Image: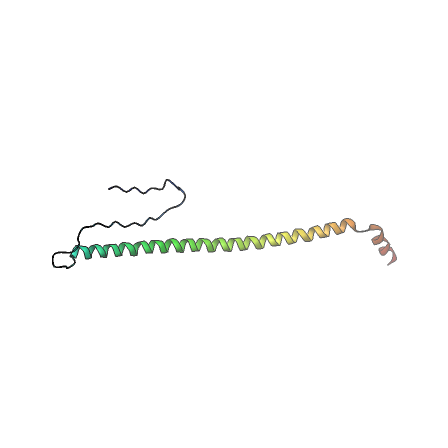
Length: 113
């Protein structure tokens, strides 16, 4: 039997594939006791599972850190954008008011005082 796992569908995403092969061989001897090799193999499988869980925890921690950094970056850039928009709005209001300011009225007010 041959099994082939490749990444041809997506070159951008890494996939972890878990599978289990079960054989129909009897694992017990004539008295019904478990063989020592079976227990050893079970221990190895538990170690492999523990290692895979550790790897998955590291991936999760890395992804969580990336998301938190992106969240902070978006907040900072949004604050900067808000400040720029408020500044541009205030400058536009001042410029438009200066265009419609009546020069004659301001000149008369200055001469009366």
